[in-house]
Image (cartoon, rainbow, N blue to C red):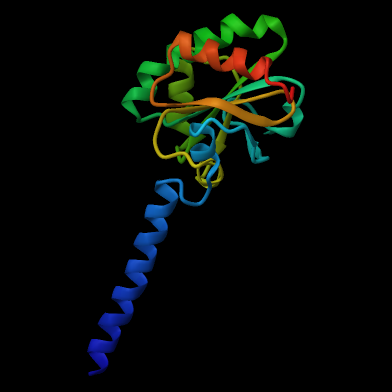
Length: 182
C-alpha cells in the first residue's frame, strides 16, 4: 500500500512538472506574444541581462528612445542559422539612422557555442544571454522569434515567428517608428 502511495505521489509531481514545462514552452506564462499577434500594442517586459559578446550587462530601459528589434535565437537552431545573415544585414541597414538598435537574445546556450555563432555570422549588434525567463515573459514559443519595441517601450505588431526577412524587419521597424505612443 505504501508503495502505491509513493507511485501516485511521483506521478502527480511529474504531471505538474510536465504541465509547467508545457505552459512555459507554449507561452502560457505570458500573453505578450498572443496580444501582439492579435494586433494589440503592449508594454514590453523590462529586463537586464548579461552580455554574451562583451562584458557587462544591458537593459531594455537603457534603450528607451530607440526602436528595439528583439531577436530570440539559439546557436543550434537551423532556422536561426539561416536567419542570422538577414538580421545582421538589417542591423547594418538601420544602425546609421541612430533611431534603431538590434538586440539578440541568446537563449539557454553555453558561452562557447554562442560566441562561435556570433563570429561565424559576423554579428555586430549587442547580444544578451537568457536562461529562459525572458522567453516566458515575452511568450516565445520557438526560435527564432522577433519583437519590435517602440521608443517608449511598447511592443507593436508584427511579431515574427520563424525566420525574419528584410521586408518583415523593415515593416516592423517602420511600424515601431510611427507608433502613435512613440
